[in-house]
Length: 264
Image (tube, rainbow, N blue to C red; front, side, top):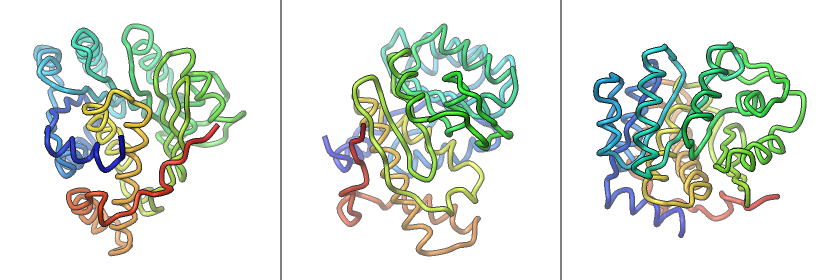
């Protein structure tokens, strides 16, 4: 299936994507997937989180503003998602920066099936056991090769691993993709990483090949970022343009050729 076909499926099916996510970026995540045609819902309370997951097509977890009650809701929702057989995307924001975050990710991975694990190079390397510096939510020095570590982690967990960066990398135990799209302006706006996880959730809601779905999501997102950056270099104006471009992108007037590249 092509990237454009997945985008069309999202707009036709309008999957409901449940988030237990970062309070800093919660609005941006909701608007980003609404712009591509999916439906967002954010139900954090443990009294309803699993129930909301039960009527959703995907679950996105984000530990950016982690608290103990929030983590409990994540476990309840992940369990319900696994029972229902819908994809679970975990954005491991700041994993490796503090023991609480690292332990929360390990706990979720040990007790739930996480279909897509996303992070920057430092976060994924830390989860994989490499020595990696994570400064808040930014990646620092890494001892080793993050992509090789991601491949080994995918084999160990039996899932899809996503490393976001200047060139995104997606792999599972069988294949790997480099995604060559995006613009440096995306790194100057708070929340673009969180929005990427949300969009991955929407694509996984309509495609069971989670590795390709993740790559396709990042391709569409990156291309929208390029189109927004062509209009402005002012960060807040860029964010508004990014939402508009996500709404307007259709894969017909925007070439996707060469954006997703199969790699070793």
